[in-house]
Amino acid sequence: MCFPHSSSQLLGLQVMMASFTVFCLIWFGIAKRPTSNRIREKYNLKNAVGDPSNQYDPISGQSHRFFKAELATRVLSTLHAVIVCYGAVHSLLSEPELYADMLWKTSPVCTFYFAVSMAYFIGDIILCVVMFKEYGTLFLIHALCGLFGLTVICFGHKFHFFGCIGLLWEMSTVFLNNRWLMLEYGYKRTTLFVVNSLALVLCFIVVRVVLGCPFSYMFWSQLSAARAEGMVGRWTYLAVTFMLGGFNFLNIFWAYKVWHLSPHCAPDSRFDVWLRCLSLQQLVIGGYRMVVSSNSRQRPEKERPEKES
Image (cartoon, rainbow, N blue to C red; front, side, top):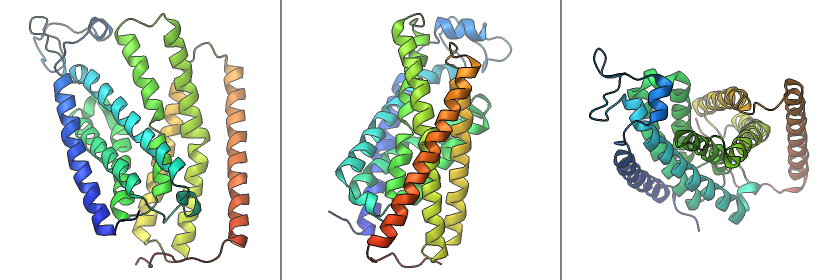
């Protein structure tokens, strides 16, 4: 089934608005919890006397808004990750047409999940702006890149295959938030905590770096070819190129930070694993080039979108 562009855009807008409303209700419903003992001890929060926004009031349970919002933010980001990762896997498995034309083939199912993710990133941007001092520049850049990329994909009616690949990057968020919850509620010295930490390191490096970088290169390579043929506008090309660069910089930087969550790995073994990851990346890129070369010889010409200015 294929919807006209206007119907697909209307669907995306409706889903985005409904999802944003649901996300807001969930966030405000959870964000009133008192600050935990772990947070009070870790950040040495005191009675609110000089700077109420950064100190803790033991009578009312009120604390700095960042600490109060943390549980709600973690729960919401986990919910978002589960939904969009399921949607991406479902779309990639049930719609093989996406593989045949990675740039231009679209799907209303993909549009639905892109719209859900857009609603989440709108809320993420609001949090990062309101609490910029606590979250910092990198998280704001991540949220802006996510919203921009999904807007181009969802309302531009293109790049759905690579959009699904991008949604899969959220898979590591589940393990990251599980780790925070176990730290928060006293499960640090458990086998489950160790297993989850190892799963986080493995998932983040494999999904976001080992596979994420080659797929980003595939996207940029096909986009460059489409730009050379006049199928993609200049500003779209430049903006998507900047977005891919920003995402991959953050993924590599955060992978380095996540890697240090595995304290039992010796430096030599870590270096060896990085070399193996780079070798696997080269293998993925080489296989992609072989597939593209084979398809270009065998696949007949088909209708393409009209050229963009």
